[in-house]
Image 1 (cartoon, rainbow, N blue to C red):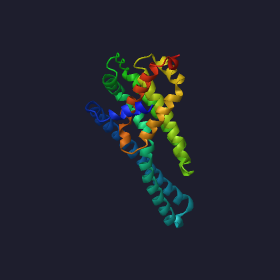
Image 2: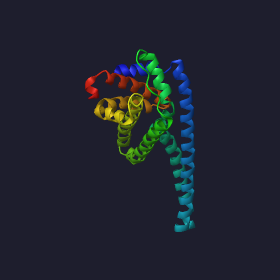
Image 3: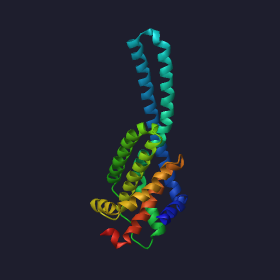
Image 4: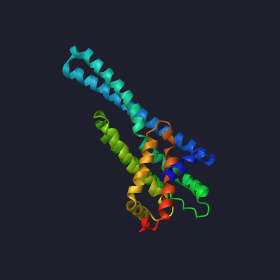
Length: 239
């Protein structure tokens, strides 16, 4: 596993990967900006609406108190967007990765497995659906973990483990589906779920680092190509 991680990291700055990196980073930043602006405007609107409702319900004599409360909520909303942008990165990278998986996988296969047949590119719809489902699940996990962030980091642990499972599962299946039918790829992942999860832990650690996590699709897909190739050389991992 450590060898696979080292190989994936060593290829991150190669010229072909840099070209994909620029495209994936641009798309990831665009999605984060859209999500951030949309969420911020929603929270500001809710704070404003709540202020009007409280004044109507409690009377004008609480105007100053309501203004202070609305101000605190606005600050919390701003901070929440910053934190949320980091925590939403697994969802963003899952969706972004679905657009570039074949470019990344093909480059890894050409560089490290040139003597073996290259995989078959995935239909764009299949990759997008796979990424969309994982992104939605990651977003739901974010919503569930968010309240637990107040309890000594329990939410961070929940989020980290869930991200490892979800991202590990997605990228392994995307790598495996280049060589196997969908159901066979999923079955292979289930038979080797412990190894896939361990690889997912490295991806979750990568996605937890701000700015560097914009390159998560490249690292995750490269890593899982190596993991899949390694499993294919172990008969016990297939049957």
